[in-house]
Image (cartoon, rainbow, N blue to C red; front, side, top):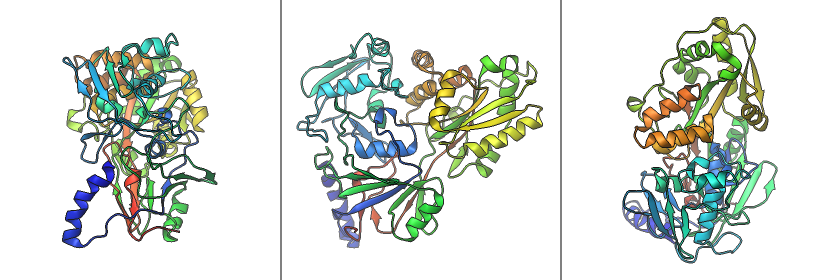
Length: 474
């Protein structure tokens, strides 16, 4: 019951000073998100809403607390690094169980790491396990398990790496959550039913950190107008959206969703350098001020300032002016699921037209967008990457997979052995023909009476820590 024990000491001092009420159990916490994920597999979670949902349904071996420090969740203690830092030993807490009642054992950890790499899972986070020995064999379907993961007992395992990796922080990322062979999780809440645009998650009494305070969590996907209406009617406790809800107190979450303009040299040919130069000359401050909803900052380098301070960023080499402007109309792909991208694309269209480049914007639903991008059927594209681990070296690997796939991740891993993350991030952006534009985040609008909210450095929160001061709701 770590959650209850940890809060008890804090609350004892707080109550002595202010007479504040202790946390209450019961009721339902209602959270508003930009959308409700259709796919609840943590290995495929990539948007802020998917990552919040993953934290509610699944548990990781470790987590990064609000202070930025690592702490064990499913593990009994932090991993022990062997000399050289290329292998780690870990021990699980005894008595852990998944939502379906099955025991959570070291073999489940090994299987969860391997499934990040399996082609059938289609995880955008294979980079989390790509440094583990035997990763290539799993990626190619030649092995079902990772050679570098040894199950020593039901509760113990050893993980050996082929390349340097901040493994403890990688294991704290939401997509690295441990799932059973049947897909069951071990988070503070269990899967429940869907009613319209609301997903209701009942509490899981067996969570490693102790029982959540709320009896259930209701996640609803609402637009800005309906979210404001729900707050005014007392029908929501927390909104995680780009805009603040009128009349509610709010705090800004880390701006970890970075947007990039990509140029496809196979389609743009000799015009590639000129197009990248035009895109690099865009006024990023104007983009964030006028066309991006929610908190946003211009990107001065490939990584968001929340991960790597601007002063430490190594900007990509500016594209040269060789090659003329394209003579035909170019396509600019955007995903309808990416906040603000349509407005930004329209602005880019205008700015490129001023430079003699004709562009047609094509807004596609996320599935069609991903398919076109993978097929190379595009000239220009706006791509968003929501970073899941606030670690510079891990962010470089995620950026590499998002922009260039597994081959670029492997190149980045090899470079991180001798170069600093800022320089490698710049090389990744250059190799992917990517121009960094801006980083954006969400605002947390909090209804009076909701307690226990604390944003983590990865932009998520502990949903099990939320409770309502006025007691159980209807």
